[in-house]
Image 1: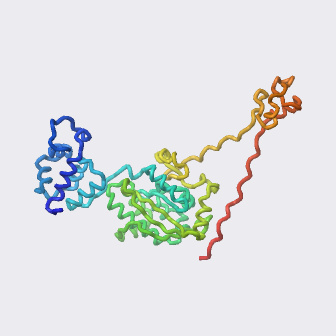
Image 2: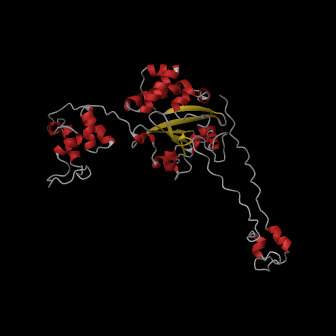
Image 3: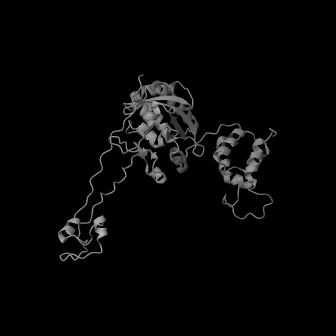
Length: 379
């Protein structure tokens, strides 16, 4: 492709794809070519028709980022196409505030449950934990209160105990947070987080001041869980393309290892944590609606009530509605009691029939035995 006017070719091709009706333009007479006219794009972008014509013809070479952003909206470009537009103009696309970064798509929630033996969770650009699967919720159960991993690492009293490689882990997180701050300079959550942490944590301030920028890569992480003991995981990080800035982290133990056994025991459905519902951290109201179709997933960033316990079934004590148990079913065609006028099984007295009408509350099930974790390895 000739390098002379790649920007103009890209603008013309995308202008031809825009439906005038979808852009809010009705009428306009017969169109000899599909899409919008140059003048219409100029009006939608808020620039002069002459300037846009010169830009498309290659006679204007230095558009501003604000102008390209307006043209990208007029052309209805998605994030990938918008980034390409900026790069063609020699600019780096800077992503502004986007509400989609704080909500997790239902398809991604379902994907979390596709890792039954791994700890999987979704982070926002400000390292807010947006959603977890049951394994990750159990693994993070020692941390009550904040659901922001930066605040957990620097402010929670158990952080240095649970994460023995705390210095290396905090370096990785702060360097990745600085990268996100550059990619999303207008993100209010990142700005507030950095301001608070620089004020409250000298360790964070020192790491922030060294100006190192690096995204989250594959890493080996050791976790000392108060119940499961030492758990070793290898983490992979994946970018969520339809919500720029979100990242999916998946920590996987070595198959057949003690860590794999401990993780499976830790995430068992019958495990309960004092003061928390089974599974640990809970969901925001916004994500609970999306997660209603996926009950195994534990969604975060708020607090959810435990599911209601169904009432214990009891038999009706009224003589007009005797309990239907096996003895009654066998004799239900028998005679009626002289005192209650109720059906009475053959070979039984009225007193026996009345006795059967009493409450038949079943005894509560026995509590499950405590879960046995694999013996911890010597470190």
